[in-house]
Image (cartoon, rainbow, N blue to C red):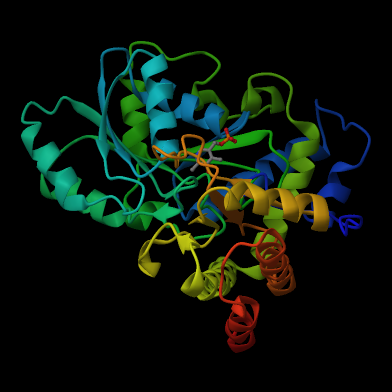
Length: 398
Ligand SMILES: *Cc1c(COP(=O)(O)O)cnc(C)c1O
């Protein structure tokens, strides 16, 4: 007998759970794209997006997923033959680097592994050696969704400043914005990219590139910039078609408007605190289960863990078995192991991930953990029972 009928729960690190209010706002007939409400609504999301990013800079919006924002950020400030330094803590940093390489940019990856964050000292060593300042940008992924490592951004800025290095600091916040604390201006990011389907709680389809005046200046000095990806006209648009270089993502804009209202109503500090507490509940349960058995969190130090996604190792065959049991027997979909291959497990099937980003609350996390504990028992994976009770203590303290 399966217990999967009922409301399903997609607990993967993006796309995230979509609030009913967002879905309802999108369920409507097509609006006029030449004048009226939609134009006002589009202008209205700009300051609210900047607030979420904690920046007074600029934002360009794109119809596309996170990869589109990667592509756009590269297209505006990097030319073929330019050198970028990618600080990697997982699969997504490599992905951004591959995007740059595809545009003819020379990519150098500084590998920090899949268990520890970016080390500013090692970054400083490499930048110090760049005496002729060939490195045009440093790319950092705030939260790498494959490893669930969260790296500090402000220390990277301090390294660049201390060395008086002109490289732009480009940050991927696709998994972290609206979940983990991020302060673009205070932390000194020049460019930040994000998508709408994770912390912003909207179905995949829109993405954003935030940039400051320094980055805008670099853009102005470019010999040529792709007409479509150019952030200049998008960020200074008067007409709807200028925002998106063509037809606007009409329904996504209605959804995004409501999602930004929800973020404003709750408040960023409260949202960051909610994610931090829910993440602690998740870690507490996993650490408890792992006391008798193979289950371990990928990132050992709590200070370096994402509050929006958690990567775990349980080994073969348990990872794949657990995900299958949770989905087919209980209606809960967990994330696959991504970029975590090992010699004895080339597909990373012994790994799995929880997404706990965006529209998630205490009862959802308790349901997630309760289902996983049932799944561990059902598939016969050794673990210490009582992880759910331990997590309940965290939720109870708030
Ligand atoms: C999800 C994600 C991406 C890719 O976004 P898509 O919308 O799938 O293109 C890039 N970077 C990070 C950190 C992500 O979490």
